[in-house]
Image (tube, rainbow, N blue to C red; front, top):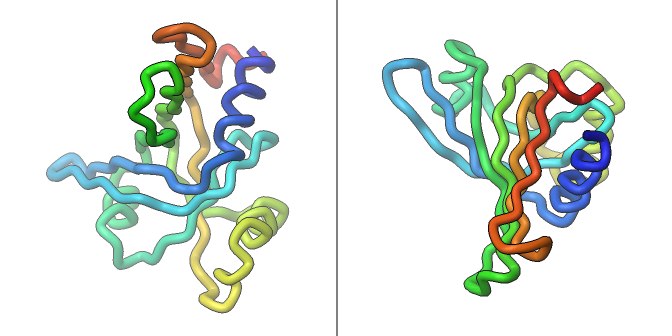
Length: 142
């Protein structure tokens, strides 16, 4: 399973925008966020303000889902990750530094940082064979 997570990490390190879906149980919302991914904590680090709809949602329901995709029309090159996890306030300084390493200009904005602790990944990678899927789950990571 660790090898699968390394393949997912390799894909995620080549990108920087994720699509996120949230709900407060009454309505749903989707947004795009810049991210840095930390394989050690198995977490995305994102910046967002408390006034956004998605942050209002996660204060009611921290369970989220999202995607990171390679945009292509060439079927043999299709790659993308779907994920599910918990959206939490970020408290670890080492991971905060990772975000600002990726986005140094964000330091001037002093953003509030959050952590998406991933519990489930599905990587689709047609370069490994048409429709090839790699599934990683937190409970089977050991």
